[in-house]
Image (cartoon, rainbow, N blue to C red):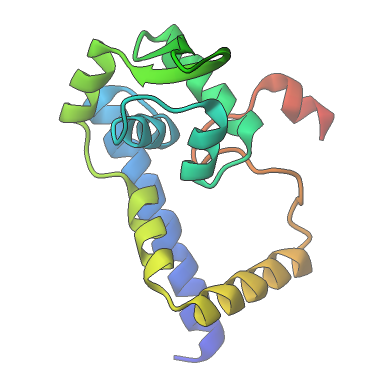
Length: 160
């Protein structure tokens, strides 16, 4: 097997993992993989700001905001004023959110982040550079990407 085939096979395996994770989230708790990832991150701490949640999910703040809005609408996440700063909003899991999280399958994005974080700093930096160069070479959009397997809002799609 040549290197090109190994790379393409690796991409296929990654896409399959993400697709199966999304399907499992949909089947078990009726959520997208992105929504489950956000619930999982919120479940690790009592409350997070939107910016903190974006940092934890390694996602653009506007993308995670879309997911949070859907979770708030579904009654799985609550927005409250932060006790230490009334200008900020704190995001917390609702009772229904905690129940959904207990029933949820593993989160593929967590596996990805764990594997990336286990790489040495030099390997991680080089991988990031090579992957970005690869995406640039195939003219992939450079706009902030939505969370994995989360539908973009119609407004964003029509702007592209």
